[in-house]
Amino acid sequence: FNSKLHSYDICGLMARHLVAKAEVEKYMRDINLPLTCLILPVFYEEVCELFVSRAADSQRYDIDIPMGSTSLDMISVEDIAQIVLTVLRRRDVYLYK
Image 1 (cartoon, rainbow, N blue to C red):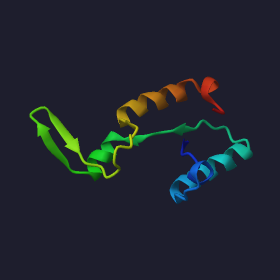
Image 2: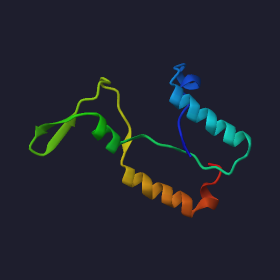
Image 3: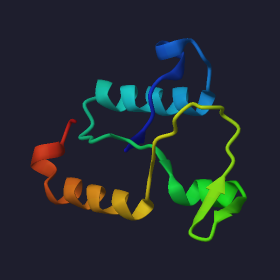
Image 4: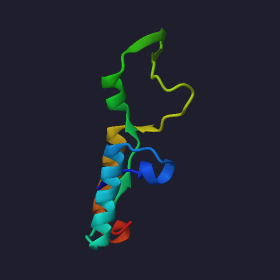
């Protein structure tokens, strides 16, 4: 299950999509559903689709994201595929985590 942190419990901000995912995870754990949860960062591919890139120089492109100097964790969909494959193949190790 691709879960999210509960934004309201953590910092008092109501981000409905985050709270909903966190509540669904809590419910599944409460009923003891066989479950493995991943909390994933933003995908590179989504950022590239949402924001326009501009050439910074001959070898690099920049993407302006309106969030100041706050860092943004990101990962490639391809990298997530390898992680999920490992979790599925080693169910006994990752179940209920």
